[in-house]
Length: 333
Ligand SMILES: NC(=O)c1ccc[n+]([C@@H]2O[C@H](COP(=O)([O-])OP(=O)(O)OC[C@H]3O[C@@H](n4cnc5c(N)ncnc54)[C@H](O)[C@@H]3O)[C@@H](O)[C@H]2O)c1
Image 1: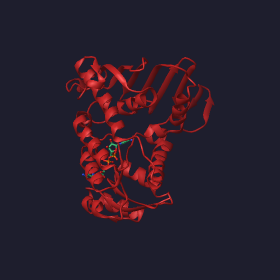
Image 2: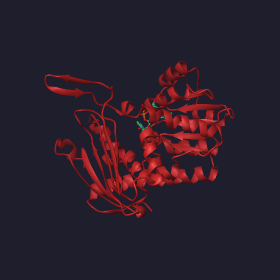
Image 3: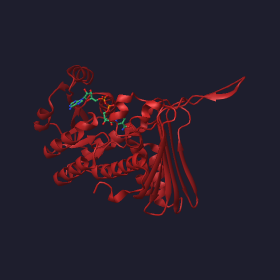
Image 4: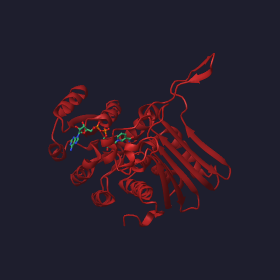
């Protein structure tokens, strides 16, 4: 397996998460750290034994084989296009961009250059999601009739964040819509409703703290995606796929494997955030990328996949804000 020199572009939360996996892989060396904030770059470089560099320097350096782009979303598209033209293998956090136009440009450049490019839809690498996908493809469930995904966050971000997040069905829902496509294929139409009954400050900005999208798949199945911003109990992720011969139910109901049996009955803990719910998925996606690039094998999910998951999420958000049923394949074309 070929050794892989990797540069991290963005040394924040996700950059550190991925670097912590990469540094355990024998074939990988993290050579460079790029970050807008010199203190972030230096701190990560010291921990990882890498040097602090500029993005252009990294892209010109023939010794760098791959880049991890974990900057905030508005910076992704330019970095991907530059890295692809420089011939680097690319891992980029989701989404590619905030608009379909910018995402489509990225797809075009990546396809033209032919570089490996994987987008961080990590749920596809969760051991249970991976197993269910295999079983679905083997036909265990028969014809699929119904898909249901729920993502509920433990706490609501600031109003400033929400105003620029793209909306609940994009910012939170994108992973659920990607799972919908992963398990059940492309979607014909989507219709969404929402509410902000518990927070009047959201209503003034046409924002919602809870939304429900109904979807009709091309294969005839129907489904829902439900998102909410503020549970009081933790980070709730559920996915159900119902078919002729039964149902797959995906949910992690406990973080630690113990219960307390006392005077008030039985209680147990619950995963509190995405790092507790999906640690294996975050590790597996990075390991798969490194192994496949080293071995010269294809990587995925691809930018084209990411574009289509964004199309679905943006169509759902548009439906939520306009009250219209949206034909997904025509949306943004
Ligand atoms: N897959 C997931 O579940 C998941 C979870 C969280 C975040 N994300 C995605 O990861 C990306 C990063 O999110 P985060 O939470 O790690 O953000 P973050 O703010 O923690 O980290 C971003 C880092 O990038 C640096 N930066 C900003 N602009 C830059 C630029 N142009 N060049 C170089 N460095 C720059 C910042 O200084 C910061 O250190 C976002 O696109 C987000 O949508 C994905």
